[in-house]
Image (cartoon, rainbow, N blue to C red; front, side, top):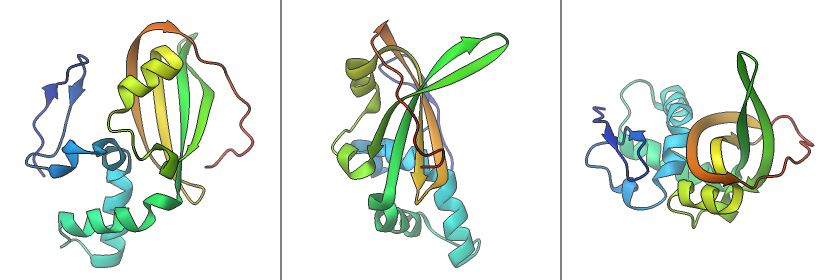
Length: 145
């Protein structure tokens, strides 16, 4: 699918599907799961699948997913990831745009949101917010999901 990049209202480049209705509501879950969905649908239906099949598949298992939010901290020549939140996806489904939510709850910084399906890593997305940091690291009881 052709994607046309644009700069969103937060100053970040976005690559949405053109002519896609998901952008209107909860588009960010689809962005998190896009590669995982393509893999699942290719395994079930072969290479000749359509976008509607991906959407249907996502709606079938979305309630079985969970999210982890990490803060990215520079550490030497790399980055360190500190877990700051864990959620079941049904608890987050009403959030239409994650950037204002993350900014309000955790303050400013660089954040990584990972999504897991039944303990299997399914996708990730990075976000950047402005302001003073107000996050607190929490203990990770399960490394996967």
